[in-house]
Image (cartoon, rainbow, N blue to C red):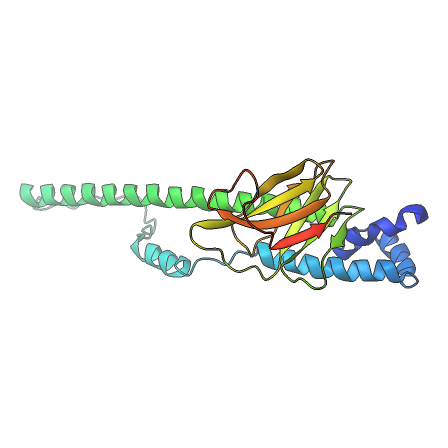
Length: 242
C-alpha cells in the first residue's frame, strides 16, 4: 500500500477507508505536507458538493399534507357484524341523494388519488435523479487519483478530476444567475477545439462530465438557452486540466 498511499487522499476525505488503511494513511499524513493540503482541499470540495445536492422540501409540502389528512376519513372501529335496524325505511329521494353524494365523493377521491400518484411519481423521479447525481459526485471524489483544480484568483468554480475514471466534477462558486433566455454551458477544449460537456441548469449545483482523451482545458460560457454547438462568448471559468 506504501507505493500508492498518496492516491488515498480522496477516499480518506470522505471516510471511505477501512480502519487499517485509515490508520496507515494518518501516519503518512502527519509527515506529508502535499497530502495534507490535498485532503483539506478535497474536504472543502466535499462540503460544497453536499450543499449543492441538498434539496430542501417545498414550502407547500407541510400545509398540503395537513390539508389532505383532514380530508381523509378514519376507519370506524370494528364492532362485529352489523345488525340492520328495524323501522321505517328512508324515503326514496333521500336514498337517491345519499347515493349521488357518495358517487361525487368517490369521484373526488379518485381524482385526488390520481393527483397524489402523479405527485409521488414526480417526486420519485426527482429523488432518483438526485441520488444518481450524488453517486456520480461521490464516485469522482472518492477516486484514488482524485485531485482538485482551482484558480486562487478566481472564485467562480473549481474541479475535482479523476483520470482513472475519465471524469471531472465541476463545483460552481459564485456564478450569478443567468438571464431567462441564457444558460451556462460546459466545454472541454483540446487541440481540435471545444466540445460541449453539457449544460449547467442551476449555477449552484455541481455536475459530472466525461473528460475525453484530448481535453487540455475546461471552460464555462454563457450561451443562449438550450446551448450552442460552439462557444459564443468569453469563458467565465477557464481551468487547465494538467
